[in-house]
Image (cartoon, rainbow, N blue to C red; front, side, top):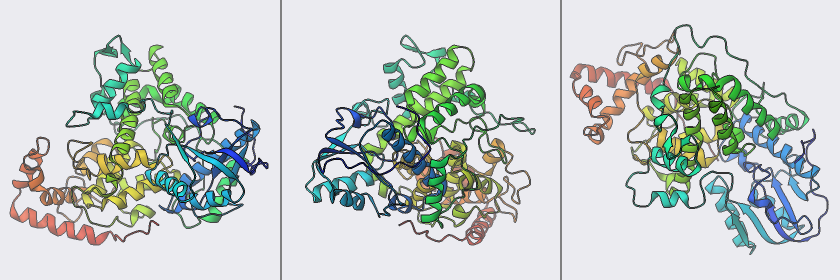
Length: 533
């Protein structure tokens, strides 16, 4: 399809009222090769897109995230218009509607489709909303498989059968064998399936050195219109729009892919877990949002990375670590999401009941690691996987945040957040709310881990090695509180029993001091339930 023009897509040109199919395009389904276009007849069918309030308010969506979706939708809509395809587009500026049901009801006042066609959404809530609407309006719903993913329909379900544990590593191996990605015959490239042990490097005291300037994209007229819309309708939502540079069309996404392969992939493997003050991007690809909105396909991204390895431009640990995130982890969490919805929504294996600290929404916190990580999210809607898992996620785990509250925060705050990928990562991997379905143990650590992997602790008011003193790191204090609370659960755990032994070896005096310090930490950081609807 042709390059989009620089204007907001208009509403549809007067197609006939009686149409065969109303074909829905959601904001994370912006791929021209979607199954939605199979058997699409411009003479009988009508494409449909809608911007609705609820997608920015059911969780208080970061302005960066909302702009990403709206700008990408408007660019895609213009492509469809340029291709002379019939499209009915509802914008917030023209018709501010509450949710998809209201938008569909407004559409049915003008058109009488015989059927509604929908590719499987990335959010169970959205799927249920469309199902309810179609049932209430006696409108047949045709639900299509999402051909964006590498796993074939039903493949994950078949793989699960007979397994007591669904470990990502073995799913990843199955996909590599079937696709031939990073394979030499029936053996993995280099003789090993996983090079994670070579991907845990941290920077020296000198830091990452001179990095290539991040590739960002100036806001064209379409993106500027999306920024104006978000500022108009959601002025109190979290996040800043001082700058916005995300790719919002396919051409930009392809440019960012080329930039990553050329500039960052060679060192991505070694330093993918490292963090550094005032360096939000480092060697990370920043492609997840474009992938999740389907401006890029996972296979073309993997192919580009594999080709760079075959040319000798990147080492094996880098290309394997990157491909594992897409072919392994991304496909894995999607399979888990649809296998365990709606059960995910109520999981709370550790009975975590505390409110999320208020600073998560403002960044106003005296712990430097959290201040750095949350400021990035507010300014850019971004944090790489270790910042998410071992800074913002770790603190929420140690604080024992009620799982649905931290889930709502992650879904709201990141530009790449779509529930199918966000929810399992947060409730499973990050918070252990699933009781071990995804991870064999909670990902817990003291402040020493952050000190090892970053320079965040340099100059911080807290000391990562201390647990009970006046300058003790809250991570370290809450780590011991967490272990004490869950001692019986983990005393015989093969990967946590040693930490429990260290807990048991503490003197009564030290335990009392840690408990006192933990009470101070909880009083120091207000935590009020944030309204999410």
